[in-house]
Image 1 (tube, one colour):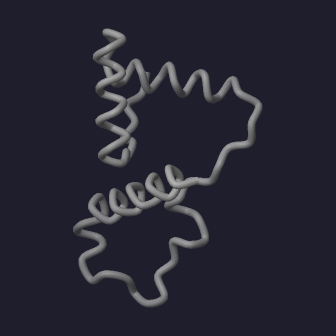
Image 2: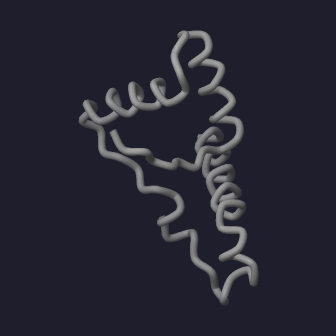
Length: 87
């Protein structure tokens, strides 16, 4: 098994942790099981919002982007999650 780091919006992580506790499994197991179910599905996958066309800097971006990359990626993930919830 290989370790993988995944950025999750705060609210989604909290919901996943609650579900894992309710099921009596670890967060990692819940994520693995969910990913297995998703990959069995034939539906087309949406693009990762980090690589979507709307994520483009029109300039050099924030001056501290390399030092705070996790902060900025988290903000992007949170915004994308909120956008999906409104649909």
